[in-house]
Amino acid sequence: MLTKRIIPCLDIKDGRTVKGVNFVNLRDAGDPVELAKRYTMEGADELVFLDISATEQKRKTLSDLVLRVAGALNIPFTVGGGVSSVSDAKKLLRNGADKIAVNSAAVRTPDLINKLSKSFGNQCVVVAVDAKNINGRWMVHLVGGKVPTHIELKDWVIEVEQRGAGEILFTSMDHDGTKNGFANQTLAELSFLVNIPIIASGGAGTTDHFVDAFKIGKADAVLAASVFHYGEIKIPDLKKKLKQENIEIRITNENS
Image 1: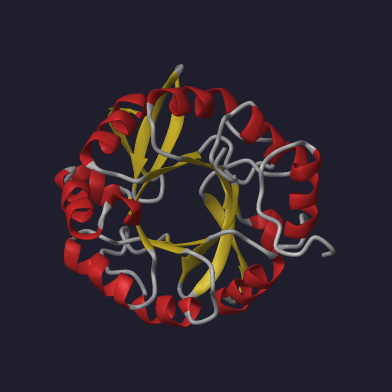
Image 2 (image 1 turned 45 degrees about the vertical axis):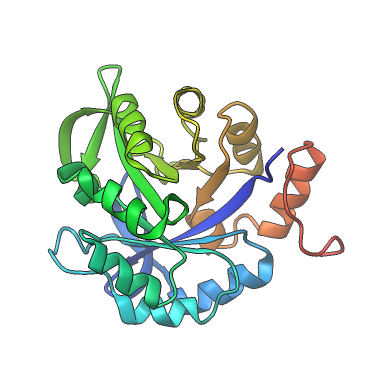
């Protein structure tokens, strides 16, 4: 059985970590470099850095900040936001990213997934998918959730796997920041549809929500932001809880 992963997420805007609810009402959550250091010390399995305003502002990811955050880490580091070409990805990998996350650009130009996978290997390619349940159908949204599409979530995840994605980061816009739990039924359906890892995002509020995402949602990893940033859930405590629930998890210090 593959070890499950806990992944803090740094949503970056204007060089700071921010967090909102349902993709709006953002508030400051701290310095990304300091948070990266903290999560490494606490035993996070990976870290995700998403430059959430890059696509909307039509600019590239903050590569200098990526370099600084990468310097504070010794765990796998995924970077996304504004990535629209192989050369964009190459620069971020050169600056310390281990994986590249693509979202809006992949929907607009699906062949980008093929090109990234061919250039760097599918283990480097994470396709982030923001979706909202509209009249019973999960629809993909772009540009930080601001632009709806006519693409259904299930169709899109199947296509991105076929095109060479190594992982899917699924964020439920309906659950994001609510702290009411993850979209577990949908997560389980996605896990059944594809053979690549699914990272659950959107809805973490308690340690039981993580347990449910793994057990009910069949997630391979769970990503969260505010509960970690503001100290509401400590990663060592969370991992102890998961281990008690017989969920295979990496614990770096049994006595922590």
